[in-house]
Image 1 (cartoon, rainbow, N blue to C red):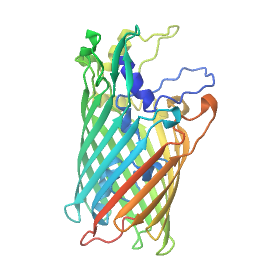
Image 2: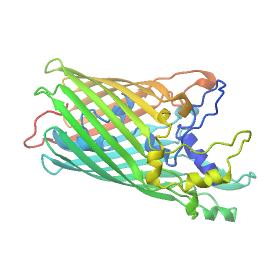
Image 3: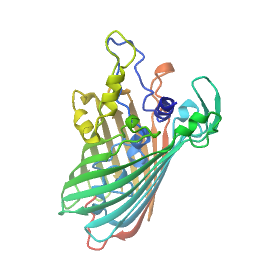
Image 4: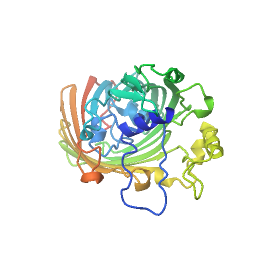
Length: 391
């Protein structure tokens, strides 16, 4: 039953739905984690740029990507809200991600933030391996962050966020079988550490770089068996973005993010068999969290994915965005183009992104036609003592 819940979550998150349909000589060993909703981009702006967000200009949603950008914002307070229907191309109309974020600059050098992600997996009919009905439930997961960031200089910023994760996959299921009582909501704690370096001219033209270690935390379990806890999606990200300013009205930025999953590969069946040995499973689950981060570099560079994005802005009021997301074929093969627009009037900003359909038939990308709607409120005007060097 436990494996059923993990498989269900991964499929609905669209992170295990992209295996190759062409025959391969070597078996695919996809690195998987619990709570994969943490890997879904929760921001419409980044969603329009291929999910690039590590070194873009700061906004209310910076905490989801790189918290250390926040002190460089020209606004003192920001609030962001985003709604993402998920996997609607597969006919799932009740699966969605809600995200809320906000920051407040204590002074010109320091900021505090709070972020919330809520993922609903819709209505699920539960049953055991024998097909016995356990009732209907609405599994849901959420993560809540609190963060602090500050400038170390006019060019360098750091950030630290603490995260609480709750994953309730059996919520509402009828206990028709007494064994369901063995399952509980999974809980974990994690942290993000981030750095931002800006090398901008007086007109805001130049480079920005971001480095982030995210979801560094405990394993998560859905039973009282401490030996069966799963890894959460620890990640290392490095991004760069260049802004070209043509005049006071027109500018364009280009960026690239590289993200590496810091999770070891699961064991594979021994040669000539189709099952994994109990010894291999025990060794995998017994790895400590810290050692697993380092082991993830042992021949696992295929877990690196790339986000390429561009954003054209006119009068700081209209933005047009394009992007491309790439993932290795043997880690799921998510590869797609995105586009988006942004409109801003006074304190209110509207963002919209769209994942362009690709493939056909059994090769069709399940994330095709994914849309995101976002609202951003920039409050209190430019903070006292700051200049517009973040755009």
